[in-house]
Amino acid sequence: MKNHDLPGDFAIWIFIFAELLVFGVFFLSYAFARANNVELFDEYQQTLDREIGAINTIILITSSLFVVRAVNAIRHNAARLCATWIGLAVLLGGVFVYLKLLEFGAKHADGITLSTNTFYMFYLSLTFFHFMHVLMGMVILAVVAVKARQGAYSAENHAGVETGASYWHMVDLVWIVLFPLVYVMH
Amino acid sequence: MVAANRNALYVWLVLVLLSLVTYAVGKLGYGGISVVALLLLSVSIKGQLVIDYFMGLAHVQSRWKWVVTVWLVSVVLLIGLAYWTSM
Image (cartoon, rainbow over all chains, first blue to last red; front, side):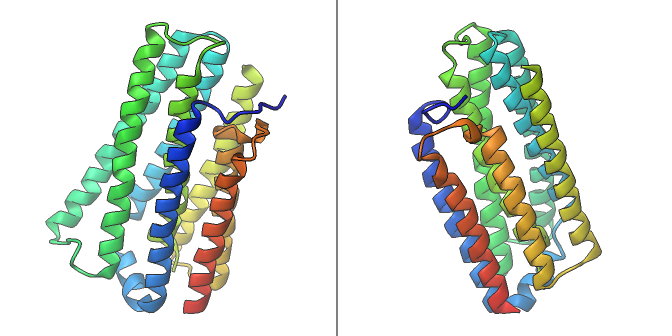
């Protein structure tokens, strides 16, 4: 059965479209800047921690699955189950943040900054910008989880859950482009 | 709920498998325009799966849902163009 409306509050979709536009410009800036500095980008891409990047990909995809299960749960009036799945998704978001901080810390220890070279400027700014969106998504999901546990949502009224879920999936979608682009492609 | 959760699990499995292939490509050091094309194809499949089944837009009639797909296709094609011009 088809729904006429986007899931959740329409306002979040305007926000999501704007965020996607900004990330899109960032990705294309990276790709076209690389076209003018292929050797530099390929050389320094090899210094990135691809293992952490891959693990974080699996973590975000899995947290997105948990959020899908939360939405399915509330559509069947299972508010506590919904809160549990969202809580688990936030927990995985925390693991993502921890691993990203380890990655940033290692680069900082090596003396790498935004001004080290063009590749690191893009790597640090792109991944940090995404990192901030993960934090924002975790805050939104945590609020939704608390409200779900308090019984604020039901099978008939769960736009808040869908709104938070849509934002979190956007964060996941952006990482799905970012990881191969910055860590793998050359 | 069971069927919806099972479908989401299948989507998750495909996403994980494609992500592991992406990681393996990086680990093995493969590069070049054909590898980039395959990686971008993988990004397109993963992205559309997230859009359709995690965001749930496959079950939505609103025209707004196409904004996300158009974004994904545009970004993938333009990244491909940037890499193609640099080869």
